[in-house]
Image (tube, rainbow, N blue to C red; front, side):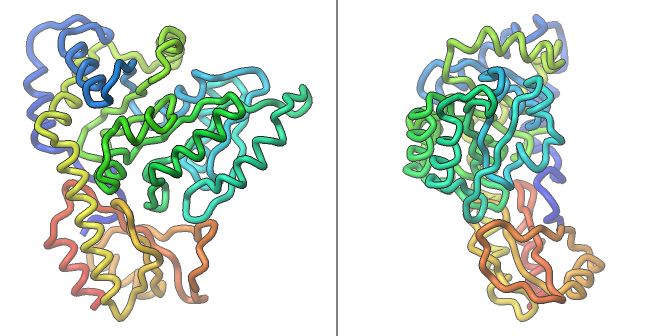
Length: 349
């Protein structure tokens, strides 16, 4: 019963097979091989326009380089106060950019409140040299607490960014989970709503180590190529990342794995709603489920083999958590089985 993180899951068998198929022979290095070119074209097909694609090793690298692509002296990027770029990157976006700042924006359950964004970014709009100036806005899709920005919400935030002449970055570590939940297309969830640059995650959804920066603003591509190299993220044998993405996209595997993870989260949420020992904190929209439980009950579940973590109370959560209770996070993946979920459900029934 592994619900600690989708990072705990292994690689999908089809992706392992793709890696094996690419292992033999020789191929041009540093992203110029035949398989690399095929995958670049596949990204453009998926997003319904020409895009520039840069493979990187981690989501941290993708987010940091994406923001650094729009770096300026005194630059400030605006993101939700509990976003990954602010809470979980160990300051990497600041480090990669050489000292730009990250500014927290409030909003309920992981999503930036547009009013708060407009008010906060407006404080720096005059670009007074002592204060700094806006550099970018970043949103996470799906968010760190399993919620999803609707298409209109993305468009609203993009409009604010455009009014202040800054780009919109999307942290898509769980991009596919949000995509299938909204039943939309990659184009509709990104550049058609005003997204300029995307951190495209595959690792959480069945890949071994495959992340990419997808750039819709092609004028930035040459500079980003140099930034990636300087950040030690240019792979010599990049065909092994390309092989993962080629298998990931083939026959819609990436959408199937995301749908499965989301379905397992919904199944888990239903079990928690029926439980006598746990309360669902809010309805999941993707593959993360949050529940309130007594600490001793959680410890019993963990002793019985269930892997999950306690979590901090997110901004905007108005549910009750007792003194002897904590909030806990459960994450499902392509590898989660219905049997695992049902066994957990029996334990909390």
